[in-house]
Image (cartoon, rainbow, N blue to C red; front, side):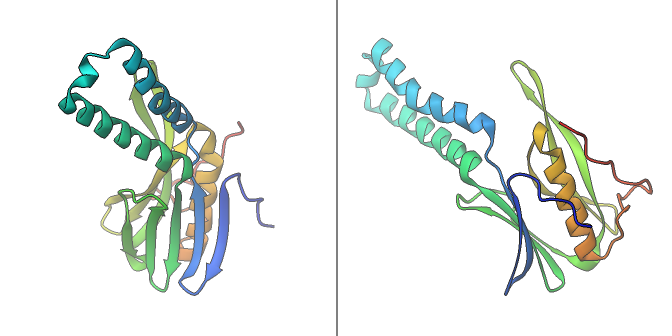
Length: 184
């Protein structure tokens, strides 16, 4: 019996092959959008003399545009992992983002979900990454947009891709069964 699809995950089959899609919808992106909208207002109130300089306006405009791009990507992007023939393809969009990959399926020995901690000013934030372990032992990041609440989605992607690649359900690259999803 197949497990229910986690939130923000969908599986499709098309002319390119079978795909699994994970919508980022990062909670941090909401705050970044708010910052991008509110900060020019705050700067306009307190720093009027600074903003008369074209150089300062260009710098602030570039920063605001960059933050807005990151916020919109974090809110709207989807990572798509496709098994097309004998190749695993990874892409992110609609906003272009680093991490586009093409890996020959025959090179993949196992898939793992690993915990990753991102340093913030308030401590650390837990995220998850989907990693492909190659036959030579090299670790290749497939998707890293999983927040702390997305472990179930990361494990679903790992299990689905493991099945599609014919690697065996317990394959984790270390000889031990992969961790089961945690509730929460």
